[in-house]
Length: 507
Image (cartoon, rainbow, N blue to C red; front, side, top):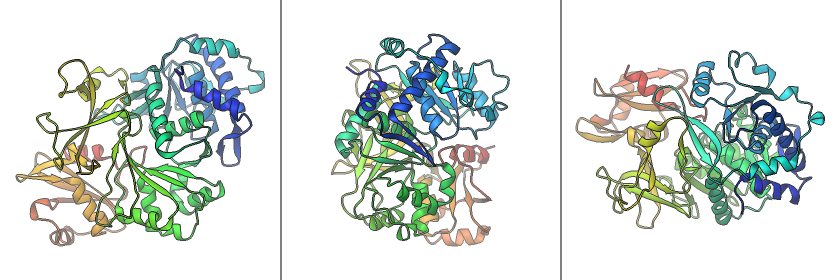
């Protein structure tokens, strides 16, 4: 019986000890070397924090082999890891530490100044002499027997309305399920070479760790700056014979718009997953048409349900005018679409997408109020306690069982008596009219007007904006205020920071 993700990793390591587990630039590490370093790091952590278990340990490192080593070392110490972005402002980092109170921090000396003043034990990776560290493999294995599969695997910080991120707690069991069903649906067998582009603070990175630990897949770490140089990014995929990527669509849209897939062949790329935001069908078709031997899948799910809970494999070429479905639920996950009265919606009826099953996160760390608001009793079940997660997303089900994503519950507004999806305004301006590079529509409640923030090379007059939009939108859908920004604010995962813009408009 397996109760910990390291149980899988140790089987993998014994099966392929000399195989390369992780690659970064010109460096690489084998499964056996990774296990050795992780166990040694666990011994160092024990000296720092004693025998504590299930206490979060922070990792303040850039995306590198050290980060993978740190995450596994924390797991060997019987604690969950919490990866942080080294580019995060100090105030935000301090807010996270105040909320989570990690028992230790793993970092490098270059970041010492940012972490000054903290009464938390620190391990500097560049101080470690790996050859001089002693550890007891038997002791670490015995200690791990204290853990159960619902103990925390990791904490992932997501935006919070108060300015302090919410720490989502994910356990081992939920990743067991996700990996088992993914392997079943997509035939993963350990031969995969992953092109890892997501930041270490993103749940996709944790999935990539699981692909390495559970299946023995190789991770090729791609620096975030590569997203700014998409030709180099594609060349790196070709150079490392990457066969599987799981990316947020924004960079894929950019690659499609630049027509780079026609210039850089990717014959080894067999599977592409995308999730996190809507992938405009026009740009998706550029990938689909240029990679005829590649399987594409659209996945959906917030961090609170362990990566993703629905998937849609694209088996036929969609029409450019049709959005892609988010698909059907993963096995052992149930999707409920509930109306405003908490009744189940019929086919084609829009409602809030809610999720039940073992995929659910355990809640928000040290935040019972927000946990109680999002993880609630299933209103369709009054017989016994059963938790569902309310995503805040609006969706509806098609006759064939596939689910269509409509938008955020908080981006659906009532304006002048009309129900408006702000995402529709953004989609038309960006993709149909191609008026601006990027935009974000928010609602100013006091003045009752739609505000459009946009990113573009040149400013567009309000008159020109209204003239163009008046040809495709009724008057009540045309924004009342247009604000040009040199660059729209973005979260650490690259998405436009809608909450920040919403707060700006309502100050």
